Image 1: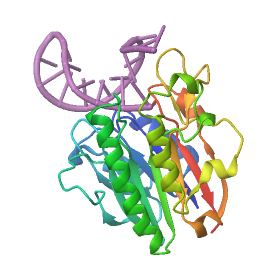
Image 2 (image 1 turned 90 degrees about the vertical axis):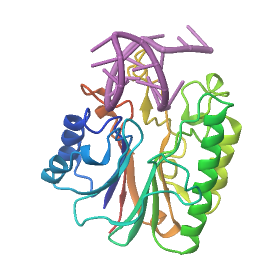
Image 3 (image 1 turned 180 degrees about the horizontal axis):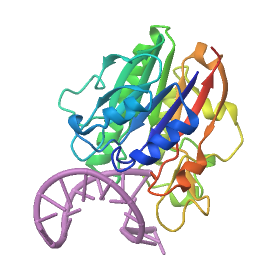
Length: 257
DNA sequence: ATGCCGTGGAAACCACGA
C-alpha cells in the first residue's frame, strides 16, 4: 500500500501536474495540503476521473487539506484539530482508509518569528501533540502525514546556519517536533534513510531546485505497528522540475499489506 | 541576507508562503 503526501500550492493551478503525477505513480492514498480553494472549487470531478475518492476541507485563498483514496471513500473522523474552536484555518482532516487512521496536516509556517504567527504555530503544535497522544493511546494503526513546516535536524537543511532564527528551524520548533515523535512515532523517511540528505521543498527562486538547496519539511509519522510494515519510501523529486509545479515535491511510503 | 517566484483574490496591488 502506497501512501503519499503532497503540498500542491493551489490544487486548481496545479491540476495538470497533480493528475500527471497520480497517473504515473498511482498511490493508494494521497494527503494534499495548500488547496487554496474554497470547498465548492475543489476539482472533484477531475480527481474522480483519475480514479480517486476524496474528502476535503477547503478555504478561500489559503490553506485547505484533502485525503484521496483509490479503493474506498475515506471515512471522515474529523476536519479540524481539537482544542481551539476559534481556529478558522483549514489545516487538518482525519479519516480511516482500510482501517488505518490517516491524519492529513498542514502545520502553520510561523514566520516572522517571534510574533503572533509564531505563537499560533506553537499553539497549533501543542494541539497536534495532544491529539496525537490520544490517537497513540488507542493503539490503532495511525499515519500523521503532511507539511509540518519543520526541519527536524541540521541534516534536513541545505544551510542550517542561515535558518537558525527562522520559524521552521528555531529551537522551540525542533524541540516541539522531538517531543511529538518521542510519544512513540517513527519518522518514516528518516528511518529508511538514517544518514542521507533528503529534501521535499525547494524555493522557486535562485534556482533552489537546480542547486539542491532544499528543506525536508514534509513528513510521515507512523504508529508502532505500521512502522514494522514500512518497506520503502522516497521523494518524487523530478516532479519539482515539471512546468507549473509546486514548490514542494511529493513524498511517499510503501507499507507491506 | 534577501520573497529575486508563485498563487489567489480583489482590483491593476496585496497577503501569504518557507
